[in-house]
Amino acid sequence: MKLILGSGSPRRKELLAQIGVVADEIRPPDIDETPQKGEIPRAYCTRIAHEKVLAVDANPDDIVLCADTTVALGRRILGKPVNAGEAAQFLHMLSGRRHRVITAMALKKGDHIWQRDVVTTVEMKRLSDVEINGYLATNDWQGKAGGYGIQGPASAFIPWISGSFSAVMGLPLAETSGLLQAAGYPVWQTMKDKT
Image (cartoon, rainbow, N blue to C red; front, side):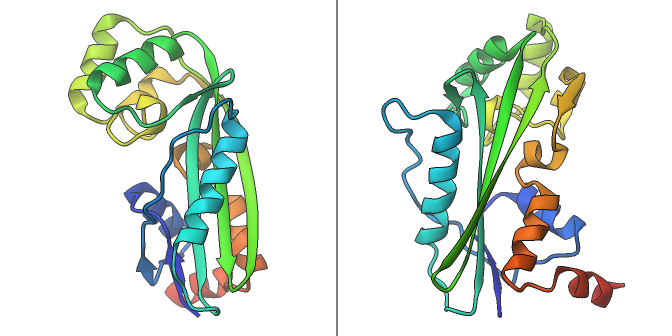
């Protein structure tokens, strides 16, 4: 049995390592992540995780883990900004407000697919232009849903969250561990073997 991580995100790889799980292979799927007309954030995130796991070729005994993280401001989906201008726009929208971060996971073994999603509420303090411009200059916004990463310099902008910190980073570890165990992956045995 091989564990395949269907994600090119270094954060997801690092998060799995925190619970002693190392993927045998990394195979990021290539899918269209464009939201459908009128699609709401949670449904979008769940659909994308499902499409990702279906797009990864694997043997029937292999376990494939995929995830998608989306920042939602009301019904609006804030994906990964295409440039610094869009990242600045996202940060201005989030400034001084609460928003939701949704991470959906899909895990496949043979024909069986397990899915979960985790919704975390995040509060961002009111940001000054100096803070936004300083953050944009770090380039930490690149490749991050909503234009920020909670684990980097933007942590200075987040006074409060309700939910899973690891989910905001891109992979909720408690729920991921549960999915892996449901699929027969020996999470705790793997940890024991590493100590």
